[in-house]
Length: 298
Image (spheres, rainbow, N blue to C red):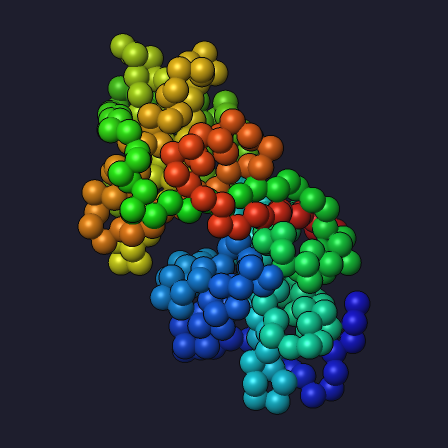
């Protein structure tokens, strides 16, 4: 790793700095494809909201790099005890000594990881070549490519008028079984999907009598003008009938029923070509081609 010049210092982030310093810095750099990190947001408001939801809090999980009193870098993480994984927020560096600052931040953040973390994950735009170089240097290996796709409200004129049912308790067990069948290792379990349902989180389903054919899990953040499709699933026995298209179209109509929502996003694995074609056929456009990279701890 590259040594950090003497004029640089690494510091914790204070509670007051999370919203006023850290969030604006991460969001500003994240708007550039060559610096984009998948777990960071593109506006200070959304980034601040994301950071405020982290547990442990950023004061315990982030480090800042300064040249004198100028902020030049930030790095931190979120964790999932069930998966034993840490998602890395960064590295975000704004300095010509990019790799030296990134190396120092990575070395400073790793000792902060909780004991339950067994694996680290970076998630970055493939155009972020410096992050990729750092990932290779730090011993990460590729965990697959994906696309972040974007759909704007104006595209709704081309979306078919499809409907889906709201989930009822009669299909709770079937949904959990289908979710586990398709995503045995997921950041959200079927039980967690059920628990998240509220005014801003909706599970829509397609059924045939007592049988659950598929579901879509969508959410809106009207305060930020955004919506997200987080999961789409169709039972293998029901594929080839256009049900995935119906579910996504229904989710779009639900999200844009909120006047505040102007744009929606979703993530699709690059290798899942039928799904990517489905989304693009409905009007989604690729915003970020992404890559995940992972490294075991120890």
